[in-house]
Amino acid sequence: MLVLWLSSGNILAQVGQQRADAKDTGSSDAQLDAQPEKRGLQVLLKLTERVLVSTADAMPADKYGFAPTDGEFRGVRTFGQMVKHLSATNYILAAAALGEEPPADAGDELGPEAVRTKVEILNYLNGSFGQLHKAIEAIGDKSVPVKSSPISPLKGAEVTRLALVVESLAHVFDHYGQMVEYLRMNGVVPPASRP
Image 1 (cartoon, rainbow, N blue to C red):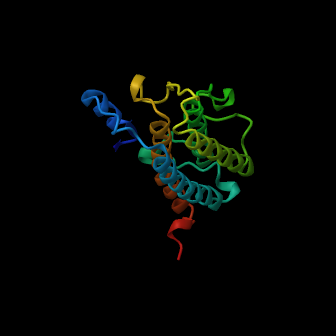
Image 2: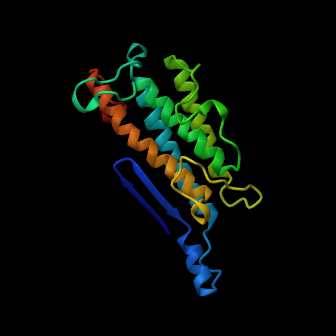
């Protein structure tokens, strides 16, 4: 069973309740079947990737430095910083799911300083989705360890590949909503809203 709770940007994903139930009852029938989970996540990731990359691509290059400054928006990330942030988070959580250290240039979810232009940011975004695809492929592979991540609320037995990938996807869609606002503030209709 997968339970996902999103609240004001806070993410809590708990995966594997069936395993915990199986331990309580002594049954092994409640084990998570990795293949259907992988297939479902692959479809969701492809959809997410298509929506996010097309949204990031829709913003003109000269607007990647745009950030609203009035009212509640004061001090928020620029459009480009937001895309780099969600990409860096993808890299960090995918690395944990693959039992690897996060890329050093992901920073504290900021992404590499050297990645600045629209083309560079789009390449970084695409690469981050590639890492999530690898993390999904590793679901069910007991030879690949899973690590907890300091940016994830998941700790100890809660950390699974499935949970880390779901957490990353939920985080991406939190920022997708912000990206849509930034596009509309600049007179750009988001690709998903076009006829």
